[in-house]
Length: 169
Image (cartoon, rainbow, N blue to C red):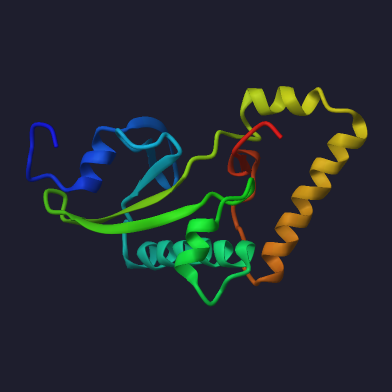
């Protein structure tokens, strides 16, 4: 595993990964030497409340995979089948401890989304649509959020940068 044989696999994949971005949630990298469709979010909760909120967000992502695949009886199978164009496939998370900084760290592994609605390419694709197609995209988005809301899951940070897609469809 490179220069430090004592480093854990998840840290190696993250530290040697390709930087993709950073936000209030933490930093995201494409996992090193792994299928480029796997990304890792590294999140460092600042306190117990943030840690609990993160656990709830992870649980919501798992529930969305179960909801999308309609397989609540077998969550592991649901996670593997959670391959839709609207929900990133959740692949797992690893809780770790940064002994140098004396704080907990969480790595979330999930399927990569290629662009978000704040991306210039997405904006150009949207602008090229006919009027009725633009309206259909908006109606589809509203319906997706309504389905999520019907499951009593509320996304409290809806913005173009958080609406992502896997392809140009």
